[in-house]
Length: 353
Length: 225
Image (cartoon, rainbow over all chains, first blue to last red; front, top):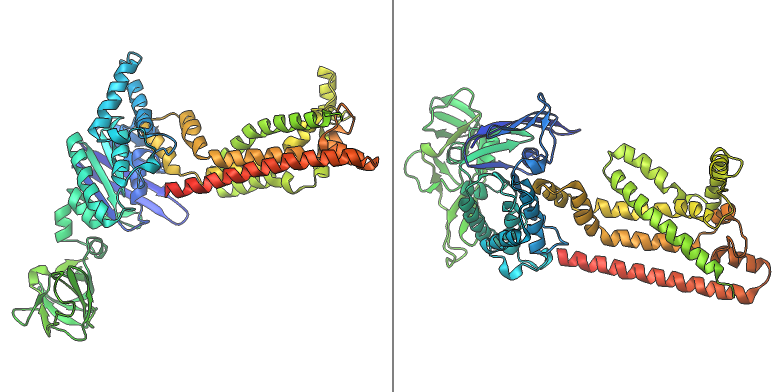
């Protein structure tokens, strides 16, 4: 499995310029809304036509402006999951799946030989696979979120796609539902063993589902690589933001292992990583602080303001640092006494360009 | 009471509505997809008959289709048909006057269409006609129906352009609206009242239908969210 994408598209006030290659089976594109991640996905599916470039999947050219190739979306063998599932509202669950199934029957070499009994059997087996038997004659408006997702998956898999594109599949759902649906989606995707590209602005979602991560900002790719690696060592400020780093400061290099954090009232910090001339920012994840005066990088804390979440404390200091620490739900809401000092080990300081 | 005007009005309205049903949907569908500037121009042209006085539409039609004009002469020579002063001449006038009503409601419906449905259809490999007739049209059904009914109602009431291009000949080109005018001119109040009543009943019925359709749209909207 390999995917090559190199595309450009210009709009009045936006330019998409994306280039990446991956042979991983779970690719994630993470970026803020409006960064062009969804447009990238639509270009791969053939729903958006780039101005220039080339898209190749498994030696099959989907799009190539030099060779004047632009394969129609329906011929790319690519499944697309839309944000709200895009089920046809005027058709039942069965009707939705059947619409796709009929197309797939025509694609096969033995087309024409498919009799109605076979297609009925194919429909029944898909409906069973996706646990939709009870609602097969229901309309999309009557389905629960979970049933909608299964119906959209069933419809997509009915065309037997080689690659599956997920466009913010959970963004319109509440947190409680999300978790369950995510697990269910992963179960089906694993079962069908397809290349998957997930586009999302939710880092948890991406972290959980993808092993190759692409970070996007303002129409460009700012970083790509192994998901875990990019979460541990983001290389840029935007990358750090996207992967959820709360504390980011401009820095001044003092020597190879010492920096001055300009946005945190100029505190001096010792780093494990060697400080390069081109390092401009430092980041500390909010849960990486330790309370107390021991060790290095001790920071004096003043004027803390505390916000209480069910399972976490959020502490903000007047020097601009955020500290996040776990809390028991049963703990008295005012139980946290903010220490006078916190510290951070040098290994936890992320240096960025 | 001679019911010819009722029959004539109904058939003109029905045929005109059938014509603009196809033309209006087609125009709306393609205009909705155009870039903004071109869209504005087409929108202006297609909506113009809605705001022009019907007499202006009638005048332009006569200038175009009249027996001494190129198109009129051509039809006269080729088919020995005079395009004006027949019962069906009213269809030319009515089609132009009611076209914007269909066009605008249908365009509104197409613009409210959830594009991702068509995109989903495309990625599944469904054909363009399938996507249009089985997904887009059903989705826009209520808007299109409301436009059709509204256009039909307006067609029944068309007077100005029709009277100019088809005139008023009892038993030949008379419609309800031209008949009412004629009856008023000849002080035949008894008969005029009857036709007025018929007209009001038909229009009320049509408007009730529109309201019912719109009610349906709102209820469906709630179900979807």
